[in-house]
Structures are given as structure tokens and as C-alpha cells.
Length: 185
Image (cartoon, rainbow, N blue to C red; front, side, top):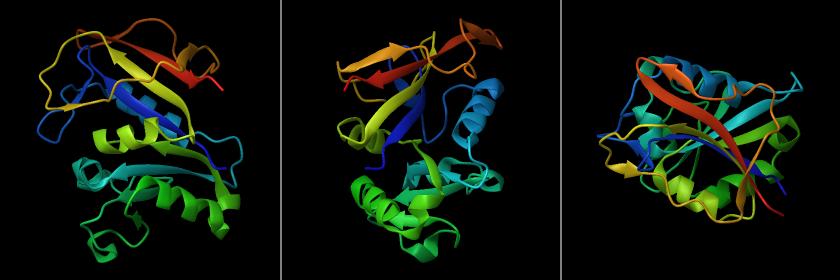
């Protein structure tokens, strides 16, 4: 079975967005997102970024589809012609995962990343395919209208990735830290 990881930045109230945008501007966190979701051990393989329709269209036009990753959009209202040719469209997360698993793409995929938004995260967290959450905890409150779902109790923090900066980071007066939570088997 093909598993996936979630990657998300949340503020203290678990907010992840406001009016279709990020509530904060953290260049180093965006670089972390990009490098983490692109990093792979086998250069012949590629990573997948799965996201909802609103998340896809919230990405600045010159940055979408996300470079160097297979982009998958989940939507029941879009048609394939609404998206760039290289972007795959599925009605929900499980249908996307089954298709990726059963297609010739399977041998080319290293890591599948769930990158938002809130509905996709909610569906992902309850899936048996969910492996880890790469969580950037922003140590501040922001006004938000979109939130990350409650993290199930069977996730615990792990220290496993030397690529992840340790301790509290700071940019523009905003403090944050990177955490990795893994689902207990």
C-alpha cells in the first residue's frame, strides 16, 4: 500500500489560512516546504504533491504547478481542462492514491505529500495510509478562517530527519519550530 505524509504550518490556534492565503510571510518556511517535498533519495523517482482545488489556486500563478513534483488536485467541481496538462485530477484522496498505486507511475514515485487544504488534511488524517505529519508550529496567534484538524492521539513526535532544523527558528519576529509526528503502528 502506498502511504503518504502531511506537511503543514499551523499557528497556535491551529489556523492554516485566511482569505485563501497564508496568514504569515516566512520565506525560510516556504523554502523548507519546497525542499522537503522535493527531496528524494532516488533521483530517478519523483515526489507527489496532493492538494485540494483552493490550495492549488492559492499557489501564485508563476509557482504552479509546484515545480519538480507530480501535482495532483482533488476536486469534484473542476474538469481536467481547468488545470495544466501535467496536473492530475481526482474526486477524492483515496481514488487518487489507488490510481497512483495501480498505474505505471507507481514505480516512479518516492514520497506522496499531502499539502492542503483543511478538507484534504481531514480526509488524510483518518486514512490508514497516513504515515507522518511534518508540522511547522508557529509560536504565535494569527487571525485565520481555515484550520488544521485535530491531530489524532496515535501520532507522536519523532526525531528522525537530520535535514530538519532543530529548536526554535525565527524570521521577521515570528518564532516557529519544525516537528515530525509519526503514527504509531
